[in-house]
Length: 173
Image 1 (cartoon, rainbow, N blue to C red):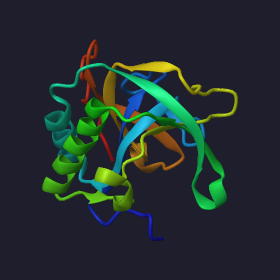
Image 2 (cartoon, one colour; image 1 turned 180 degrees about the vertical axis):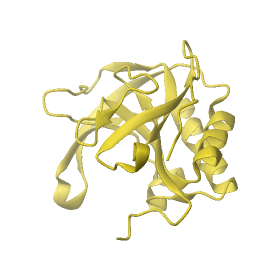
Image 3 (cartoon, one colour; image 1 turned 180 degrees about the horizontal axis):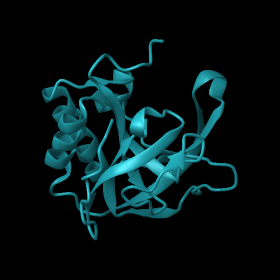
Image 4 (tube, rainbow, N blue to C red; image 1 turned 45 degrees about the vertical axis):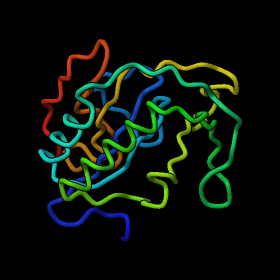
């Protein structure tokens, strides 16, 4: 399958949660808390934690404004609320992008990075953000996309930013 990580690499995603989600709090792959994805990538677990730690060591809370709704994905089946341009959010994205690339990680959907980055919050049934709403992104998390090798689950393994303890000590992969 084209979306499987190369040998020795493990799937991760760097996100800014809209709904508080702590390190070690598992959730199903179809039951994500509301979040803004910064970057999805494959990397060796220790290297992923190192890259995230370096990229997010000086992560300040961001207040972002929600823009209009859009449809993403195959045939527009994923409903999202776009995040209006924010220089701080763009900088977070670019820092993790550079750190992952420098550490030998494989970036998913490179055409959606850099200038192609379109931050958004996916609509999760009744849970969503609304156009015009201002959202506080208090920190950034590194999420293991297959904790203990089980791709049905997701689990934050590190957290950086205001009010976080960076308890990024869980085993990844």
